[in-house]
Image (cartoon, rainbow, N blue to C red; front, side, top):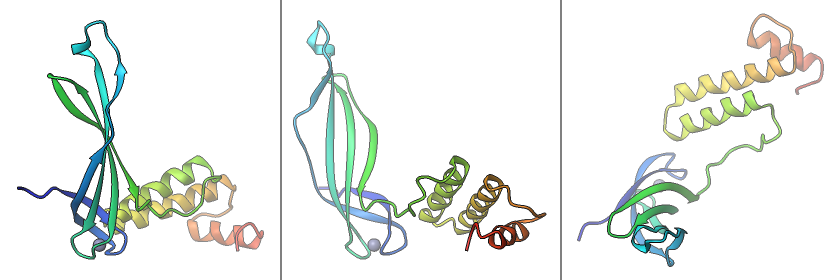
Length: 153
Ligand SMILES: [Zn+2]
């Protein structure tokens, strides 16, 4: 019997790891499209898996949604990591360009692309300076001007 594993970012190990699936289960499939010929009806099944990091034993909970036409095909349509949630700072009411750059920075960090993450953090700060109409020729002078105005601390 082969063991199933997942590749996930472990926040405890701070790196991409292999996680060993210890349990998987699902409920009854839900019928999405009911056609006249029932053999062509489409079903969706949600499969939940609990896995453990092979380095530190930290748990993961993954939800996978499969679409099936019985007797024809089964395909994975979406996959979502329910636990642990990616740790992001609460910047929900920041301007869209700031949020977009910050999310890319966090994504790069989670995949251990630290240089790319630092560059996207800088882009996020530049977007914030532009949004706040900061004065200056470079990022340092723009941030200093915002601090002098009391906009940032
Ligand atoms: Zn780990």
